[in-house]
Amino acid sequence: MRSSSGAKAVVARAGRYAEAHPQSGDRNDPSPLKVKEVWVEGTRRYVVCANEDQAAKDRHDREALGHGDKSLAGNKGYRKYLRAG
Image 1 (cartoon, rainbow, N blue to C red):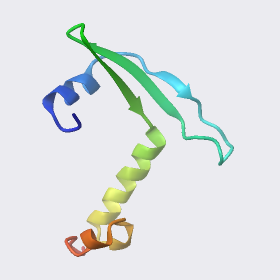
Image 2 (cartoon, rainbow, N blue to C red; image 1 turned 180 degrees about the vertical axis):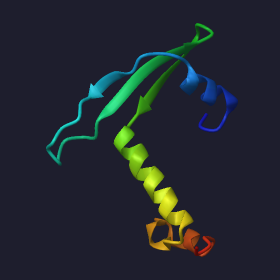
Image 3 (cartoon, one colour; image 1 turned 30 degrees about the vertical axis):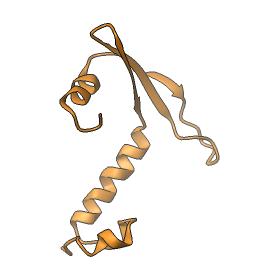
Image 4 (cartoon, rainbow, N blue to C red; image 1 turned 45 degrees about the vertical axis):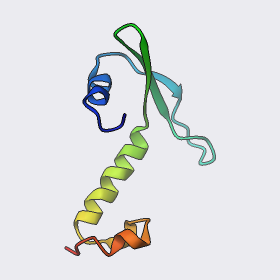
């Protein structure tokens, strides 16, 4: 359901996120995670999770890939399809 229009509607649905795991200074603790429950048509339940730290890291990595840093692509076979700056 990652790319369907239903997924976009579920994520966009208003609701308050509950903090499942708070931010911690300890490196060994899990990442901070926010969760909300969304019911669609009263029968389908979705649990939407948001990890803002990971989202920021992913955004930074995508920008770096756009500037030609191919070393950030985890899949070595995929790197050959990336354009350098």
